[in-house]
Amino acid sequence: MSSNPDFELIASRLRRVPYHQWLGVDVKSVGDGLVVLSMPWRAEFVSNPDAGYTHGGVLATLIDIAGDFAVITKVGRGVPTVDLRVDFHRATRGGTLLATGQIVKMGKSFAVADARIEDESGALIASGRGVYWCGS
Amino acid sequence: MSSNPDFELIASRLRRVPYHQWLGVDVKSVGDGLVVLSMPWRAEFVSNPDAGYTHGGVLATLIDIAGDFAVITKVGRGVPTVDLRVDFHRATRGGTLLATGQIVKMGKSFAVADARIEDESGALIASGRGVYWCGS
Amino acid sequence: MSSNPDFELIASRLRRVPYHQWLGVDVKSVGDGLVVLSMPWRAEFVSNPDAGYTHGGVLATLIDIAGDFAVITKVGRGVPTVDLRVDFHRATRGGTLLATGQIVKMGKSFAVADARIEDESGALIASGRGVYWCGS
Amino acid sequence: MSSNPDFELIASRLRRVPYHQWLGVDVKSVGDGLVVLSMPWRAEFVSNPDAGYTHGGVLATLIDIAGDFAVITKVGRGVPTVDLRVDFHRATRGGTLLATGQIVKMGKSFAVADARIEDESGALIASGRGVYWCGS
Image (cartoon, rainbow over all chains, first blue to last red; front, side, top):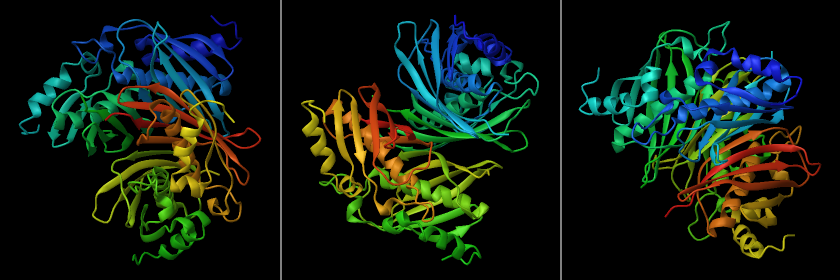
């Protein structure tokens, strides 16, 4: 757990979102323009009932949240997503996923953040990028 | 409801996915390289607990499913998503969302499909595109 | 050629860009949030010297210009591209390409426009989307 | 200049493309799944004749080439681009641009590579990602 002074602020902001509560997403560490999130597996996440793989929509959501909260470490308030890009690298099932979000470019009106999801063994599951609106 | 002969096949394939069941996504109509899906609102979808807006991850998921099933109307089996692009046009809350997926290009190894989400008033909420793997 | 009153304004704006002059891009018609552009082939465009295919970068550029000028029909001034997505559907060589740009969503701060490129036979060569900054 | 044994192979492959010759793109170094390219300025690159900024299409092209050649270091032959994402971070004019391409995920059928463009001062000008087809 990070000792970063913003950790509690970022974590409480993330935890108060109903969809995050349902997903079980939580904050592991917070840096300057950087977050690491964790998300345990849920049976409802399954895409293929035979293979038990996690649905791509769940991964896309985690990419979006990780990028968003990387930007929130800088701007200190919620920032809507303008657009999102996600690449799916490996099927995954079960276990806790870790997502790292990191700012690529912080502008006046919008910010770009990259995010990547790894499983517990460190294998890269998905990665992508969001553009977030920081203007007024 | 469509009278398209593939409707029951496509609908049963969509409905057997646990995550689709939780989301409440269902098939409204099926064409050749085309699907229309519906998704009613759930309290868990909320992003901003004050404003009650639907989370972008829910919209991204619906874009992915609509594009995926547009391709499934052609190939008749599940096709993994290679990558996904989503643009968020308007905040939405409550009500049933309609998502239309349509093939842009059907290739031998992968297919590109566009998708758009509208609310019950016909306002465009989000749109995007997925690339789906059809190879062996 | 369009009789749209903005045609000359849009065409002169497009033609005064040095890179457009080198590419040979020109305006064929202008509508409300819509443009059709043409681009003849040049020997320098070639990617593969054996097959003579047009370079993907040339196609990506044409997608960007078509989306940009679709937005310019609405805002009447240059709008920088925030981000660009391009899908390459078919290899092409020789001949004039036609590119259609069309606004998907016109917002206060940015606009989203889709674009598609066809060859002279009407085959879809590439398609994509740009986000353009319209704020101040 | 890299002493990597593949350097001459990669460089000669890049240099024999007519569009690369016109752009003036060249290889600075080659690694395992990694390339650094350089591109000097040309007067034809200009987008805005008043400000002299480089056209976004030129930057998008350089992102595509850098990602493509990162993959070529692994597969040793030309790989077509499936799709491309580019984010434009800062306007640039004049001077030589440096582009770094790096593989994110090398799969059997396609590869994902990230690329970033910096100016001579090290400022980040644009970044993005391509998906490249490596199948048969």
